[in-house]
Length: 379
Image (cartoon, rainbow, N blue to C red; front, side, top):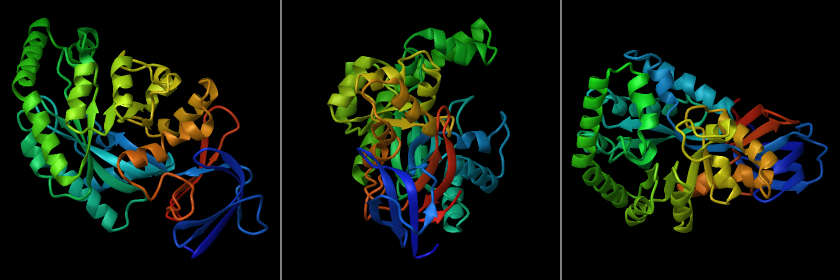
């Protein structure tokens, strides 16, 4: 990385406006932003220069580590493959979701996600990775072993976000049984008898463990200063529970009522970028575009398609009245950074990290032409 880099003839997407101009990075930090072109530096040919994307919730790493049922890939190879896809999507800071809590037919046994976290941290220390990686623990609270699995991470400084999840039938994401039947009966080919037994077991676990484990993990996070996210909140009661547990981030609320209550309580409302791209939720809940139109959408995540994170803001800016491109791009840069206390990135501003993405977009799907992390080109 050179000590100083100049980028000129760019459309600089600042927090509240787009400026035609130049940007200087010195020793990995943004040193100056000027309107007008410079006679020196790298000519960006009128492309957008935006902050590096900040991804808070992606479980896409699982697709690289376990690409088929029962298959486990080499940890380092899986992480590097995933990291490459993350960075070429414009993401320079990523929170890798690791799933905690297992049942007899789902999840990972204790120790497996700890091994994954160790491999991520080792790969980062050896400069194998191009994005900066943090850990997001997805805690399935109605499982018997989730707190025990969480204990393997309580002293890990890379854990910056924890989500409290309950995918039991009749709860949150699956308030009605239609989608639950599709997910857990039809896709798995269960008989009526086997499905009824499966549902009964999941409901029993939820009744036994969910509230107790939700509170226990929230308390541990409060003690250690780890940001907490609620997940799939559907009702006012869910939001009140989240407020009591000092939740900062409301992930994928399933009703406008819950989204509005979370937003008004000061939580950042997060929805999936694939929801925006598709125009609807894959599980039949509220559309992210509807929340955006109501001013209730703060953060986007790529969830299961990394490149959707860059595509979605351009769709919102194109299709939702009152949302300009700088506001839409804040949902994938400044807003997620602030939600988890990362104050050194997410904006093109003097003194912040030189995490940047060169984007060409005449119409339709944008193109990532280059990515820099702390001034060093990584894609």
